[in-house]
Image (cartoon, rainbow, N blue to C red; front, side, top):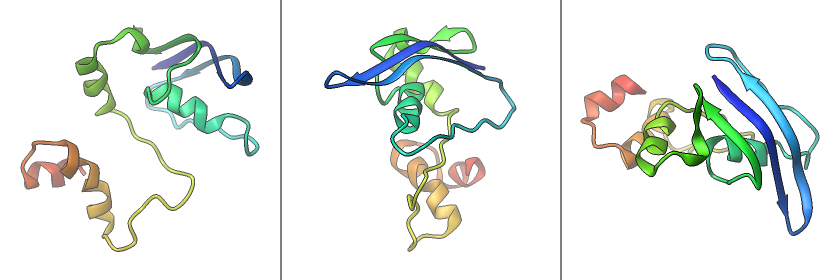
Length: 118
């Protein structure tokens, strides 16, 4: 389960996220929808640790993501997935090769292990 508590994020004095609270239950499909510029991408980046909220906390199964060491963050990111809103796939690669691309770059697994994970 992912829990967001009072997430705030601003850029150059412009508040993008203000006191966001949400719970995303394990095993369920969750959507974050809104108008262009409403902060969806900023929120996702805060959830996965690509941005640090100015205020608030992000919990994964009760563990505070913002206070985890780098190895724990790396281990947790292996369990995450995101879908991009626009063409983020390589049209020159097969579906399998697109899925395996980050595994090839960031994994020390054998080819067969990467295929199985993909």
